[in-house]
Image (cartoon, rainbow, N blue to C red; front, side):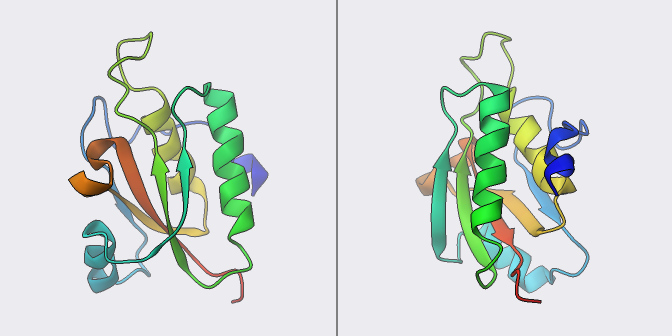
Amino acid sequence: MRAALHEGDDGTDLSSGEELRFRRDHLGLKAFRRLRRGGFPIYAELDLHGLTLAQARDEVQQLLGRTTTLDSICVRIITGRGLRSAEGRPVIKPAVAGWLRKDPRVLGYASARQVDGGLGAIYVLIASGKR
């Protein structure tokens, strides 16, 4: 599992501050719509503002590791939109999307509703480790 988070971004999902969406085939459309609407209780929140890419990767990995013994849960990861990055483009946001997509525990993710951070935050639905 650790290796999946260290492989890097697969380049999918975005080139700027656009909306993120990802759903595994076994996550039903009804549950995915609920995720996109912010309909799951948020178990934990992780704010990645101000972190380096390596620090962000470690924090995401720790968050996913803490959830493996729980029932399926939703977490919110705040990436920011990357508008103030030194590179002039998002760095953390696309990397997080790639890491989440590669982790088999992640059932799906979607950009948050505006009230929960909008394009600078992601709802992530994580599968139970009790299967």
